[in-house]
Each structure stands twice: as structure tokens, then as C-alpha cells.
Length: 366
Image 1 (cartoon, rainbow, N blue to C red):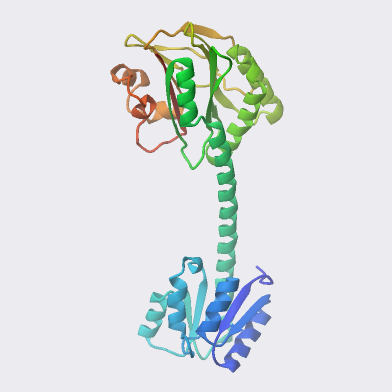
Image 2: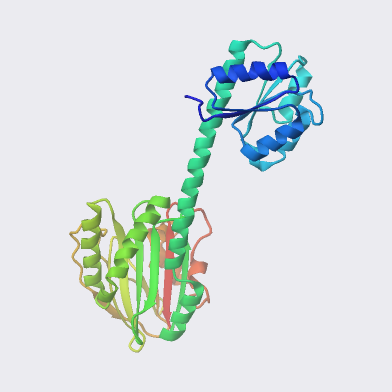
């Protein structure tokens, strides 16, 4: 590893020691070398430039090395800063005190140059690797936050769910819990016209950031084919073909799409590669059959099925993260659940840790 971009601050009140240490650093190819003759000047340099490593003397005017370490370690910005203390103190208690105050390493004077070089190189390698990993983590976190904002914009807000529920005479509730910070599940709820609403639930392949990106890719296609939703089978067929075309067999998703008519309670639906929706009528739980293959192969051929929802009937849509998190079969849970709770989906979702992304949507006709 070369050190042309590495940054070291030499902190020592003795000019001779600073010259010696600077020569050592220059021979190691270190690109940026700053100097300070006391702790006050050093703290200003470190705060301004955040170097990779400091070479710290203990006995200095204005602020000694021990106080400088106290102040640095009290600041979270310097948790990862490597501090190599160089001192003439030989006692074990002195060295232990340095480590307790936050020293990364201690080297004794008079220096053995080969050992000093080896220690500087070792700590620089560690500091640079840590910085690279930290920067990479920050970039990934930024990508996650951006993706999270996209997902939040797509998922129905509580206000939208309430508005749609009032307009179309239903009680709708939902739970969305990604396995990681973000996940590959998505669902949408929208009014198509004055009488019909549509719901689409997607469980894209992969988890975390990869799953979320896949879900967003699928959602772009969902938006493109929204006009086909009056026939859910045709809608999913077109979604399957489009996914296969753009991903070359690398993007798959289970999905269910349905339309609901508020005047008649008539529901048309189609699904593929996703758990069977459950319809609760008069205390009986019925599985609504869907096809088996996930979308994305280009080989799915679906036809829309239909049924009627009467007042009080409850429809439950979910990704497999819900059924996998339960200690009993979903149908058995629904048989004994109070389906008239205001936030039904939340009452049905376990609080236990998840092994998959979980989406649960309930629709009850008023």
C-alpha cells in the first residue's frame, strides 16, 4: 500500500524530534505531513484536516499529550483517529495510562527506526483501510436513504388509505416491515374511476438494497401498464413480458393485482408466484388460488378470476414474509381474530424478528 495520500500530524515541542520524525515519514512516502509544537496547535490542525495518524509526544507546553488525547477521544469525530504516542516514559503504569486515555499504540524513546517505521506503516494501513470502508459505508447509506425515499413515495400513506377507504366504502389497513432497512416488497392502492379501485402487491426477488431496487424497477412497469388493471390477468401478463425483456432473466417477482367495484362488491384478481389471498366470509376462510410461477420469465399466462365481497367480508393479501413469521397457519389465525379492529393488519402482524420482508394488506367491505 502506498501512502502518497496519507496525512500525518507530528506533535512534539522538540524541533529535533520533529525533524527526525518528518524524515522517517518522508522516506515512507507519506504525502501530507503537518507539524505542531503543542497540544493547542495540534488540536486546531486535527480538527481542520482530520488526518489518518498523529505521532504524539506527551510532555509539551500549553496542552500536554494526555490532555490532547482526552479531548480527542471525547469527540465522536475522532473515534477512528490513530494515535501513536512516542515517549521516554518507560514505566508500565505510564503506558497503561496512555492506552486508557485512547492511545492506539505507544513507542519508546530512544527510537529503533526500523520498529518505528513498521509501526507507522501498520497504523497507516489500518487507518486508510478504515477510512475506505467508512466512506464506502457512507455511500451505501446514502443510496439506501435515496431508495428509501422512493419507496416511501410509492407506498400508500395512512392519509391516502383513509381517503380511499372513505370513498370506496371499505376498511383498509396495512403493515409494511422490511427485513433490512429497506426491502423488496411494494404495494399500491389507487382509485381508477368513481366506482373502481385497484390494488397491486409485489414481492421482488432479493432483500435489502438489491430487493428495493428490483421492486422499484417493477413499480416503473406497474405504472406503465396501469391502464390494463381492469383486467388483472392481462395486466400481469404484460408485466411478466416486460420484466423478462428488460432484465434478461435476472428480475423476478411474485405479484397479485385486483380491482374492486364499490357498488357491487365485485372483485377481479390474478396472481402469480405469491401466497394465496385469503377471503373471510361468515367466519369461513377461503383460499383464492393463484398461479405458481413468479413474474419475469416471460412464460406466465394468466386469466382473471372473480368473486363477490358482501358487507363484512374481509380480504387479506400478503407476501410470504407474513406467513413465514407466524407460529400457526394464516387461515387458523384469521378464524379466531377480531376482524373488526380498527387497525386489523397491525393486530395480525407478529412483533417477532423477520426472516423476510413482510407486507400485509386487509380490505373489508363496509
